[in-house]
Image (cartoon, rainbow over all chains, first blue to last red; front, side, top):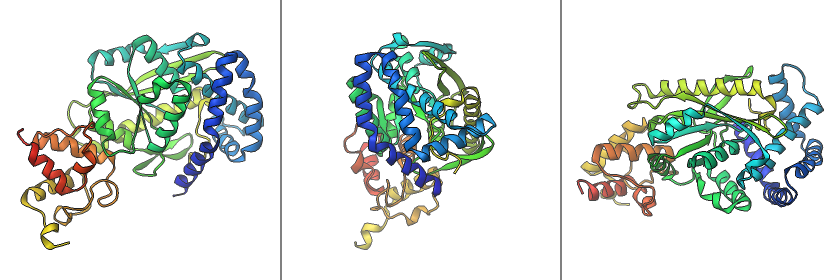
Length: 300
Length: 92
């Protein structure tokens, strides 16, 4: 399909430069500190603005939808800068340097309640804002084990990137490439882990459902929701909104209680939860538009 | 491949029905070659399907499939190998 090809194109695009860029950022950032490192983001974003017409066009398309007006170069630059800021901040968050940030956590009670039950949950985020900021909250305040479930190809890249940033963290990533990947997820849930999934993006084009999203229709993968249904776990939506400067807002919301038994109509349960996810994601986009980090035509 | 290799035993036929029913597959249970790979190529199932199979096998036969089992690739290789594993571990 068209969208699949474009997604792959985007994945390949990013693959080319990702690791050296990450390593350079880590080196610079940890030596100079966040304030100085941030200065480098401006030329980097300007470079991307000039050299990545496809990403710029995607950004402009998205921003026009969410802002309800045509988006200009200045908007696109701000969009890139927000993305670059979140990427840079991961370096500090992953190295336990939370002191750089002003993080407000909303509805932490939900997380504590689920933690007390000891059966874990599915923690659905998106390529939106900073997932890392929530993981940092989990690690430092709660010692909450959060594993990230992702497509194998991404898992390998992320593991490599994490290993470059902080070697202790690579094991928290579960790739979907093994036949028993999800059996591993079931076992981790049993030990009370939170299983993080970025549930907005599809890579393999399987099992997609289209939902109304920001004035158009976009495809979302059913897989993560099916897993929650099969393993009868609560579904929590997580978003780490970057508010500019040193400020992050971390939101937790209950999308669905754990089904007490296998739902009588599993497809209806999945559809219901997916709808809620998409609705919430749309609301987050409107609240913090520049936090959207899918730089390809999401509506293809 | 000789005929006897591609014929399901009674136990394999039961397991095939269970899998087809659970996953709502578009093939009939009888048409599944017991030696055909279940995962990926072959039946074309993915890791979510494997999870569903693991759950239903545990429920029906009381046999637990574990993620840390190094033999999973062999166990899930085909209907035949999965059935063999189940029969070996039933009531154990």
